[in-house]
Image (cartoon, rainbow, N blue to C red; front, side, top):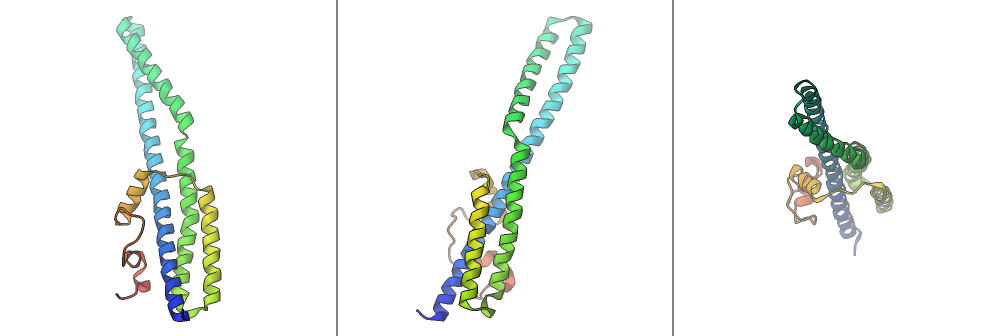
Length: 185
């Protein structure tokens, strides 16, 4: 295989790796947003429950009805369950972890774009060394990355306007590259 053919295959591999890292970056961003949304909803419910419990206990004290006291006790139990869930779910901490991972991946995404931009002006050895460095850095980030879920991936796919499969059909990688890096097909 000649250098020209090998270089074309190398460029194709780099573009696909770029898009995979881009997907992971976006998925981590979406996972963080999902965790934050859950935390906000739970916090709002806790505030509402606390308000209802307070009003209920005051009402029970003045009206001395058992129904108000029982309702307040039930709401207090629900509030306790939500507090226990919040403590164990650690949604805010997990959202921060997804955000940190996305921030680390963003640098790698940009380095892929830089490598692809410089691709025609550097030699094969330099390209292969840069590729190895990017793969190592990506693997390091992935080894510490929090797991995402299908919902986060679906939101990422929608955000990137992609189809369901993670493998890329002809021209898909090109569509996600900056315009200046796309090859006319």
